[in-house]
Amino acid sequence: MKLRFFLALIFLIGCHSVENKLNLNIEVEGLKKGTIILKKLNDSLFTEIDSFSVKGDDRINFTYDLKEPEMLFLDLDLNDGSEIKSLNFFAEKAEINIKTSLDNYGFNIDVKGSKNDSLFRDYVYINKKFNDEKLNLFEMSFRNSKLNNKDSLKIIEDEIININTRQFLHNANFAVRNSSSEIAPYIAITDLIESKKILDTVYKSLSETVRKSKYGVELKALID
Image: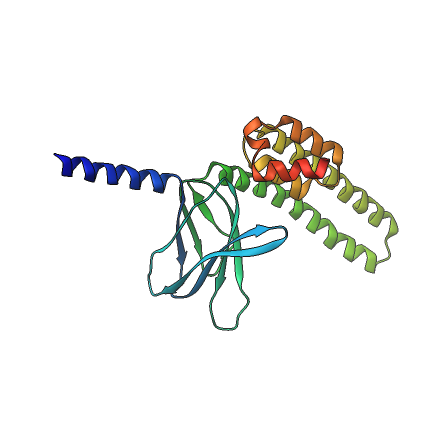
């Protein structure tokens, strides 16, 4: 009886310890050899958390004692002299599964298990649309500059300014709408620093818990 109680206690403690950590599973289609490096960003400097050497079809897994939700990074070094590839995701204390491929590492990524990352993917998707619009306009501007078509250049310039304004307002509204998630102050400190007024608006919208988070504290420091 005592033995069964002891084993059950160990099982419960083990489950509790896993639940309070980031349990990260990664699948990179086409990857047979290389090194995956888990990193975090502190004071503009990257710090390595852990690394995993891939050999064949190894199951890539990281377990990390994450204090709170935050953006983490996964670098891929193929160890062949080629450029290191990177992707980022919003980590949480949960089991998170990431799927990507060797060819589209960092561009085509599927993340499951993180509420903040799900919001982050929505945010990235909309911003890509804005950026694609601007890219098309930049290409038009380049063609018109070669033709010295000043009237068209002015119209394109005004349209780019208009898109920048719409994008900024969208990002601010997205942060406010998701004020109970850590993604909100993260967006503010990365994409909204041009306006102290907007930063203050986002901060005031945050829940008390999010205000005390890593990015909530960083946002408050930008306002003060």
